[in-house]
Image (cartoon, rainbow, N blue to C red; front, side, top):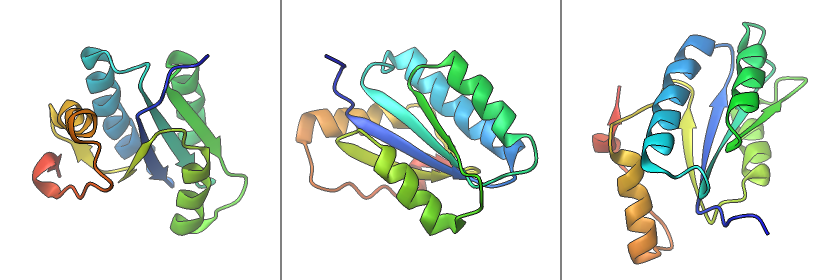
Length: 132
């Protein structure tokens, strides 16, 4: 039986591999240091990028079991991309990010703590937890 996924982090991207690398590295760092690899997943939808994004994502998928990737063969647009990765998500909760959204240190564990302690129906997170 596979572990229960509490949180699916959904990241949409299109032709911004350098931004994506930074965003993903912040998530991976917090997931690994917090010991969350068995209870979370990162689902990334690549909207037919032509800038090396697919190659980066394939390397990432090989390195981290909690990272799920979909490389769309054609551009679906933001809403189509979100729909596809939301369908792939296995988490009880989802948290959407763009490829240039940077998470503040400690924000990930704080969100998981709120979920585990309160089991809310909905969480609205403002930019106080995000760095830009």
